[in-house]
Length: 260
Image 1: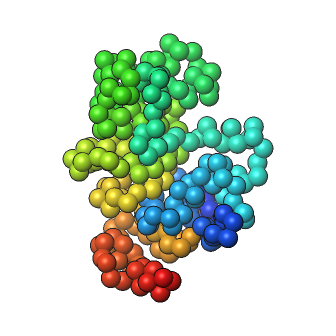
Image 2: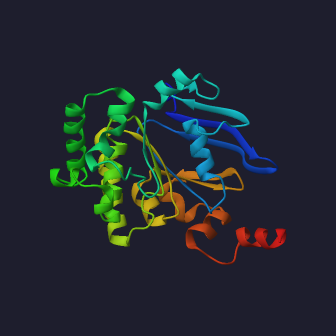
């Protein structure tokens, strides 16, 4: 049996800011078509890891492989080509206030790929429809939308170019539980239709359970556990157990007290 080349793999990735060590040897692997969710407390390195993969930050050491190809230290033109594989749903949707909804969805197509506005408009409408929004919404500005609708627009933008890899950064932040579940369902549906590989960051355990094939927990700059979402409740890891149950007592808080 031939080994599968991971779609995305991090090997011993380290990143510090001055004396603060944020990533302390992150090892992570996602196979094609799989959905991995990273959980962990604030300041544990989730967003820094994401930014290193995207090339927004340069790791101090380590390797980041995309389809088996090294992405650390590649040239800007090579980086542009690699980035064509990615879609991104930002925390808070991060829409452009001065652009209509359809222009937000089509932004990467027009600016990044030089697609003409008519074709980009048609694609934007198609993607908006796939997340439950009609043409009347396309002509509105983000300020005219509810938080849940803004998140849907952000998802439509993330999938506009049919990416191979999609990142979801806290996709349900600021949403009520019902709308959060609607967004989770849309994420699952969109990813399945595209056959995309996904990496998500979230504090929302209900979201993690809904969208993940696998879950990884980052703690003090390292992945301390990774496994199927079905194993989350019996991981055998006391740090994971404390985090997913939101317990005030346990090894995480013990270490915080010890450092105080």
